[in-house]
Amino acid sequence: MPSIFSKIIAGEIPCYKVAENDGFIAFLDISPLKKGHTLVIPKKEVDYIFDLDNDTYLGLAAFAKEVAAGIKKAVPCSRVGVCVIGLEVPHAHIHLIPINSESDMNFKNEKLKLSKEEFNDIASTIRTALS
Image (tube, rainbow, N blue to C red; front, side, top):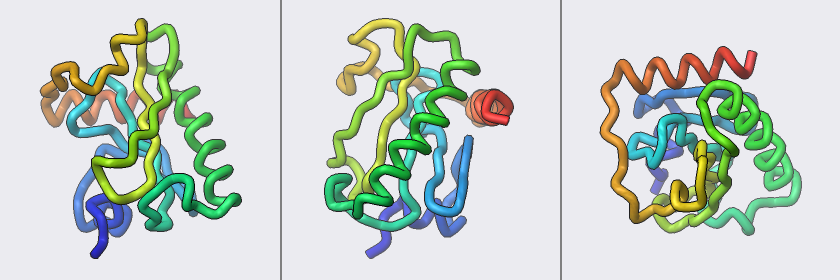
């Protein structure tokens, strides 16, 4: 059964896309810890990140690095934190989260509730930083 991320890739479910190429896509997390919290995924549906073939794994890491640079330019933060949990959705993905302290990466923190306009503005700002 296709994951929600596969449905996003297929265009069946909308997302706030920040970057895309032939093999990968990055979009804003709809339950973000911080403004700019982005998910980076391979278009190939594989549940566990360490089950990805080496080329896809390395490509995902390189793509995430590019997206993180755009987030850092677009969102005021000290760093862009990287996290792979892999239990929420059965599709390999990387969380990129703008942070100023380690506690900003705590997934037990209350999630932000942003409007559609805020999501669109953030995604646009990151896309602009990437271009």
